[in-house]
Image: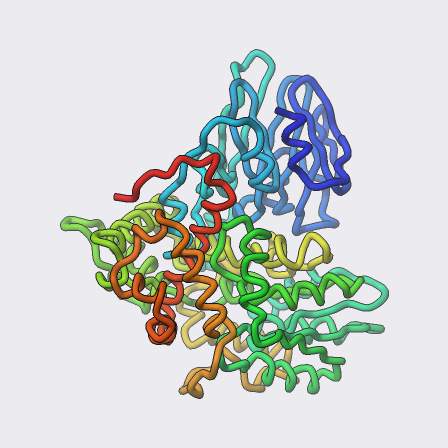
Length: 533
């Protein structure tokens, strides 16, 4: 099995640790630490330069890292305290095999695997599987703040978890906007030579660009692309920000059929675990060629803006549902607004069943943070942002070195102390911009309220792109059984395809069903199909 694991993994693996309890291979050199009898290895750390950890919990929370910790009697495999890093495990016999990628764990043996329908429901409804879910029931992702421990004479690995300190962060003494900006600035490494910034039309990237550009000797360049929303406001807004900051500005303009040419590459790179980022591969390839680190604003708006339902809004729930269940349902509804349940889009009962699976998983994931004053923020981080985080790790990385200042543990802790009331009308974030990015704070952004122009053509909805989606679905009997008459008509009728693609809901369903069909084509010989009921 180890030979299979290694042969299915990326080339260039080196053995970095071997002991009676654990073996670790890596394509890079993990950070090594020691504390008394313990020693450990860290990867994907978001907080370099801090004192060495003294336990796996310390490494997961204060370094926001995954890793392996060993001493004379135990070995512990852990993920980070937010569960953002991709650490996947498959128990077999008395061993636990782990990888940063799904495919090597699929190839461990020839035993049949099984679909996780909850994961596939959340791929559509939440745009990514939740918590421990993956498309395969036998392969699990380490959930936030969890670990597996193996001990001499302990009878096989066992799971354990802890509660990160930031869950107790209250709004009693929130950080001032100026203090928050200073924390974020401290998370941007000092590096001689050129540095790139991914500059969108929003606030996160302009704040980071302003903080990085003001450093003495800074050699900062801005890079922007089209997010294929039919508006391209990111490009026009980013151009104004770059000009105000005096930054060289490079714009990656994908070709007219870029979505068609790249979406399957994105699905394979993200291993069919997110519906985000179909537009991003041309930009990612440009970043791969930079030979300079890239600053990315991932997590910023998720941490510091309100999001979620309006104050006091209740979600639908079963009779007798508690206030906590209704609040969670309201957040789920706000995050799943793109998901259509119109009966003509689905085979009988399928749309409602997918929604039920997703809501059940959402309750399970968010119940532990019920009662936290910033529960809507934590709900976003634990659900939708899992998929968003795959852009810096799976598309921009590993080829590029990506800096994520908002993912620093001290930034996360401070942000979770900001009261929800201070986030109303983005007042707190606007104050941050006024302090940290005064030259560009008032420039137009994609966060501004007001009417937007009617969207133009999108690369994801060209006739060729839609035809590719429906060809995948038409070739998969399993995918076809999930769809209703309105979408089945698109399989052979170009005009019906064009009509349905005018709305985001049916388009998401076609993309999801196509992804499912492609996944079945790749793994169908290993995965038994279980009819969805």
